[in-house]
Image (cartoon, rainbow, N blue to C red; front, top):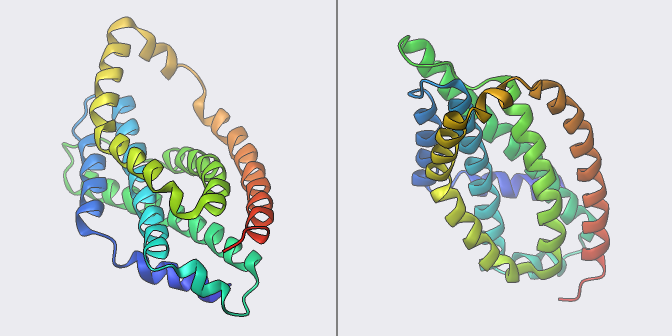
Length: 218
């Protein structure tokens, strides 16, 4: 299982540099925003995009090169293949959120006129969202394999147009006064409760994916 994780981590090094720069560019936009709420949304989006690129690239490589068929021809426990993907996801979440956090805070420190960088609360929120989303994504992935390509393409389009949609939405919320009411909510406390929920969902998803993959025919 460890070798499977190492394989995905090595593949992630070949990630398209433009994808990485795009995610960091979105995060950098947050430093120019006068409203910290909007800035946080852009930091969050940058983290989500970077994690998405890492996951889709490594999974896409496996699909393109029929890695599943090759792996299943070896004496490898199928459950370990599933566990490997889930462990790799956790590492991608750590890397994606950590990269944006370090980047924005370093830039913020170097250029004092810029806004505040990403916070640990941003990291926790993105971790929660990622755990929940990929807990739904991976059972489908292990069920249909290459059939998920179209879904991935739609998600990528949403990632590209996401910043513009969020900016317009936040601007509209600010004009109507809804943004101030949202800011008054103790989101950080909700974040902690959601973390417990997301970890439970993540574990349940792992068990479901293992059962699906063990019964899948190649």
